Image (tube, rainbow, N blue to C red; front, top):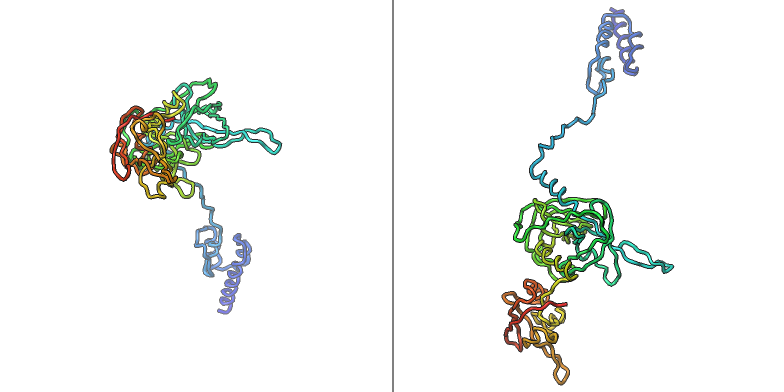
Length: 409
């Protein structure tokens, strides 16, 4: 019995020592005295098995063997075939392929002088545009090419990545539309497809915006027509009517690019965003295609846009507001113009030098006029030569005259 107890105690000490030995366990097996228990342990160790990572004092010797490494490679996923694309997804791809060749990058440059008074040409602005016809006319936003009083030069980079000089034919800041003409372009051009007059435009339909920001090749964003008929303060200081609102992102550098429907037709020209941070907030605006279709041919033919007018000089709204007048105060009429011929009166002075109000325009046909913005947009609904009824307040009484609109320079 004493020898058996000594053997059991010796085996326990050897087992305890094994916990501090590396997983090979050669020393543990050699040091263990021969006994039935030791032989059982040795046989067990020859068949490794996995155990829990938390090894306690009761763990078996075989549990200390290192488990084989597990593979953590990313599993492969089989991509769908081209035939599995959604119909709407394929349509967006087709729209991009059709319209991207007509989308261009516009750069404005100005001449400046350095510290040694040498003339240098430096970039002064850039944006997107689109090819209007095969004659090399490029349409973009007026604010992209506006050089102010400085003298600007322009270049256009086409889809082929070739860059050509361009000249500014003209534009209309009130509509934020300008037209450039390529110089010495020797390659065939792909014009944008314009939505036919009377074409459908509905809230909820697909809207695809294509741009060429900063010359970083073409980009595409998609969304829907969020609203139509919006009135937004434009670059020229007056409201642009019938603007298209979209949630397709219009990022910096995309101004002047095309907004397209699912048939790759031009439905508007991307112009501005509503954002407090300068980044897209899902509220973008585009000049409607009806306005682009009407204005661009006039600029190509005459270098300017017709502005139907009455032949008057209005008083700035700020002065009218100071005296609490609602309407457009007439400062004077143009000699020989329709307003002068119709007997419309401007401001006058009495013998003491006091300024006397003349006629105040408060309406054009059925359109109310509260300020110059209302007057401009009311007249913009008509063409040169159309007859309109001008409603006036004269000496506190309401009157009206009829006259034909003329083209204002």
